[in-house]
Image 1 (spheres, rainbow, N blue to C red):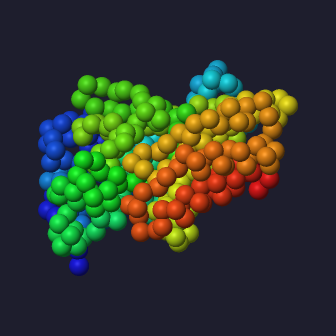
Image 2: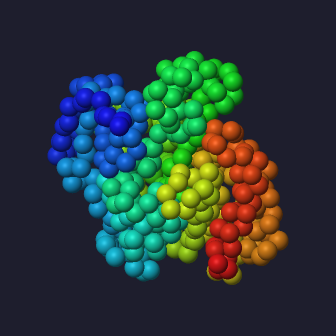
Image 3: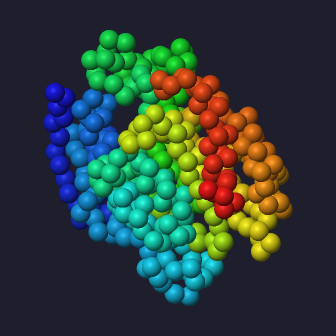
Length: 343
């Protein structure tokens, strides 16, 4: 049986109290919400914090609502004014996010992504904040301490060599969270609270190409909320490739979002892929292919092929990398056909 290391548990009631505790205990402290990823990682001795700061008592980090424009709404009706945004507290569970009418209407890709995380038990515990801040994963990292010791550890934890690239210069553990790709496609903004106050950061700028620590969140900062612009007429979709549809982490995540003109032509379109590298990646060149046209089969095919050419997965997951790459255009077509109204 894998046991948890010893730690002291704290349960603050405000963001300021939580930030103060993280600052006080420094590298020996970590925040925890649902704990669906952190607790197994602690049992594997990937993290051994002496202090866990629970965020579940911070009511200010809960709630889903549409705000802005000239009024505030809580039901996400189609009549929301331009300039409004969808605000999601970082403690909202993935299950609630997937089922919420405002999220399903204004950011369907986000609702789809949340609904495809793990299984229902974990979605009932896991939070949107935890999913955004999820640790990267790798075949040689997400193992027991005994297993990792037998291999000589790895660059991400306790070792000095990456067993994927065979050199020790850079960790290539994969970003494996579902919701960030959809949030980036929707131009979401993340709010972080720390000792120096709050700061906003675009979801697209939150992640960096470092498999060891792939976000710009400091150790004493907390992700408190997510805000998604409400854009009338925007459509989005999310697709996920995994070995077992009931629970597994993604082998490929793909989110698409498009704004359409009155004549149903594409005004702008974005595609984001993840689970292939240390951070989600915004695909380039899609507007040049689709802007000003309708999502007809030839346009969809052009976008899908463009995505395939830009994606080259590494062998950081025990599934053939070339097969994962071959599935990029397949899943791109499926998501784009949903945007076009052909499910």
